[in-house]
Image (tube, rainbow, N blue to C red; front, side, top):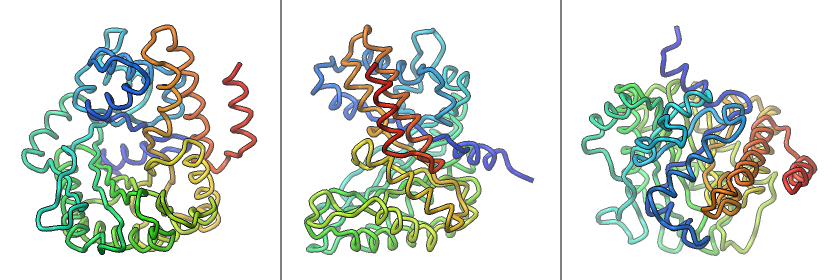
Length: 352
């Protein structure tokens, strides 16, 4: 018999739906506002989240939204809380639980560990009472072959933290999103092959730790990065190559019982993230991938809307059309039904 958490986890990766990552910290949100001349205030952050969450057909494309602590406590313009607003659209409210990254003690300078385990059970209980149904915790893995990164110590520490968080979430009533992000901003030597090797090491450590901490795979969602060359790499990779390498790693290391996989965009261009998602779904069907493959994007969904909004109330409608377009494109990609032609046609409609 399916558990309540397993039911939520499966619904989070329902066909044609993804998870909107809107859990930017106050500092990160302000950094994205600044280049557009948007005043860095709580009111503007609330207005911006409001336009995202009240987008027409929101629940058609999004199964849930990852919220930040500030946002889960705010109200929409309607007077309802954001939690109530999302629930009314048919989307689950989720919450970012990690407290950010810091330097990993006794490790090379670029190696990070994610904080937030202290007092986590009490915070889980508080957010459950506020209506949260799932949570997110991000680990950050840096590649630098010259200095030997990532080290096993870094992978082990972050895997253990992810697993402890996952266990605490499941005990407290939240579906954990497990997010080990292998950064794509590596050195020139950060090739596709290097990325694949690091993804393999990372997922091996993560799933060994999840087993050690008795995390139920059917009650979790994995949020991995794509196997992709670093942004400074001298050799690039085709969409097909990225999809093939990514799917191969997942098939080798992710148990079939995991409820689903929702990729992060990791700084990719908007259409690049959509194209990679579509291709991995096309390949996944051919290889009988055992889990749904969908999206949990932040900037790759939001940036066009933010650029259109610019902090002006009169631009809300245009901004909502912009995120609606990206949501629809990624929904199609999660079904393997996106194409450059569909993207072009959608963009033409958007421009009119």
